[in-house]
Amino acid sequence: MQSYYANLGIEVTRRCNQVCENFCMRGASQAMDIPVEYIDLFLDQKRNQYKAVDQLLFSGGEPTLNEDAIVYTVQKIISEKLPIYHLSMVTNGLVYSDAIVQAFEKYNEFFNSFLLPQFAKENVKSNLEEFIDKNINTGTDILFSNDQYHHPISQDVLSMYYENGHHIRFHQTGDRDDSDILHSGFSDYGRNLTLEDNNVRVFNGLVMDLIYLTAKGNLSCYGDGSYDFLDQLSNQYSISSYTLPDFYMSHLSSSSVVDGKVLRKSKSWKKKK
Ligand code: SF4
Image 1: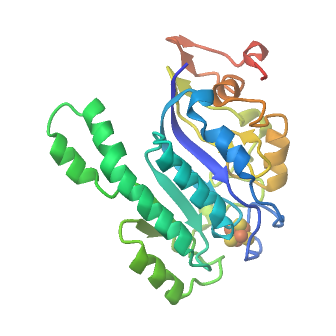
Image 2 (image 1 turned 60 degrees about the vertical axis):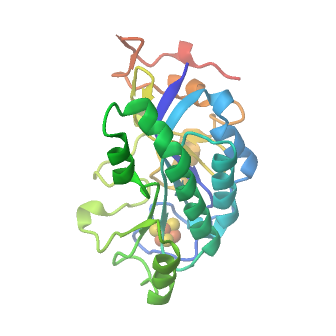
Image 3 (image 1 turned 90 degrees about the vertical axis):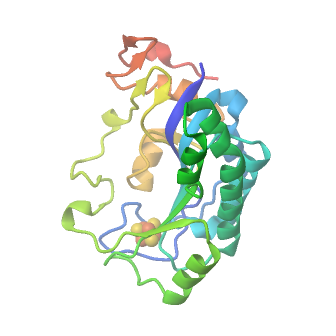
């Protein structure tokens, strides 16, 4: 079954260079980086039968502390011409990573010269050149967490990102209000994250919700929450055992539509490899 994925996420590390008291949803940092073998399995197009991925997010921990995994992933996308249409990263901005900036710049060249024209050719009926012009250099985003809970970002670090990442779109969170606080194990929508809600909406081959690969190599439908919560959700769903279709078919939301039919989550969909 060929599927489109709206959102994939990779937890590249559980290390962090800050302690955001009364704010961090993850809990204590852990000395753990993701092995690249898990990334290979997660993005293997033949194994996972994906047609396209709209967005791939690099998450943590603090992602810049494992720049090797991010560079590896970007090189893989480019060398294998994977149909992954957008890269993003959230960082606390304490570290300037030239390796990540250069990798994102290279991805942008690949996006502009290969992915975007290919997408336009397959999907845009008229004004092809106008569509390409409008979307050029929209392949990568970096979001800086510069709210009141994080250590202030040094202007020198910010300047280096802005000066060297010519084609990267940069954003800053700014201060957050109370409703936007992510407490450990809670979502920003002000309700508990629950094991029962660990599901994805799928509509005729389009996987609408995030599928998240933890640094331990396990799959979850949540990217938010503490490490303990994520581990509890995901520890039975190793990427070594589950392809992406196997995983989402075992976590279908009750409103999902497959082959035109509304399906209910059922144990019969769990197909372990
Ligand atoms: S909120 Fe982010 S920067 Fe702060 S301790 Fe947690 S992972 Fe680190």
